Image (tube, each protein chain N blue to C red):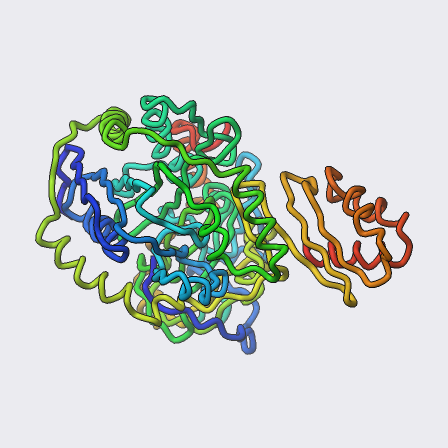
Length: 183
Length: 336
């Protein structure tokens, strides 16, 4: 939970370039999707293996974040989403905002370090968007990230089918064993 | 991160001032998971006050009513809406390291509320945790709860409602009209119940059930030096008007007041026609309409709406001509 006052401002998608692959190497085609046991995973972005937030480089040094399908499912019905104010610097793992579901308030730990430069006002007004469209309309905020930081922190995320699929299968198995997800 | 001691610390803060009845357990939450043990705490406010959930708009509280009643208002760091608290309620908080609870919120809540249900049962209240994760007895809510991750801890708070001042609880909620407020009060009286029980027995039962659920031995304790340090910071934060104002939140599309899960009051206006409705599940429990052209047919419209599923109301109101159409439009605005 962040202590900061949130100043929701107009999102600034201007200048956002088409999505680019987040890691070096052969780029997956834009919108490439892999399905893991009924869950659809986009391969144009990277995933924080612990927090279930995705990170997508939308322009050089500019990263958009949102919840992945397991993050959405384990949250329950999201009632409130509150990104930290535009201009706030956050470090990887620190709250970039907070989310409330089932009267339970929790942090949204940023997958990368940077400065918040835009919110998705639509998802703040209608948090149900993260359920209906977690990858596109349900994005949460954007950060500007130093290139050296990106080089340092992107390898901590999972990306590409060869990393994403085994990670997601492992998480599914773990959550099912814990009874967190239905069989 | 230090390994937390493996026991359940139990702290009874006793009767304390309004602000402290919040900041004491927030101070604990800031340290559990960062050196302090899992903690079950109890507190009773010595004076009435109002508390609003972390994300909620301050204008959900009737600040003028609070001023008239001399009630301070505080903002907590866990979820839920605005609530009225007084010394007829014993509050409990279970605070555990975040990595001890399942990642799914619903499951974490079930884990941390089930021992409270056992404690209610131990003191003679036929409580159960319903599908909405509310603690209820005979269909009435008997425990208000909220939850959150504060630092490295997850905290779930709830209360034993020995006496409940329904009028004060309804009065402190912002409502668009006296009629809407009266409907909140009516539904609150029906769906929120006090459960007079021995608080000492409840504390003992909760201590036993939480210790068993967490697999820890209970041990009486007090605040650590680090927690006392947090307490001072939190006292200042809770007195800060900026903290009370909270985050800037979008105004909801329509006013509504929630009485318990699945029970709410809504209100809407359309071209001079007004409607207030108490809604239970997906049905109108009771509706009140106002339209200059109903010419005494208002009571018939209200009777036609009572008990109807929301989805059917437009069809029902067609029988009342143009005024019925305006009522339907007002109701649609109230339930977007």
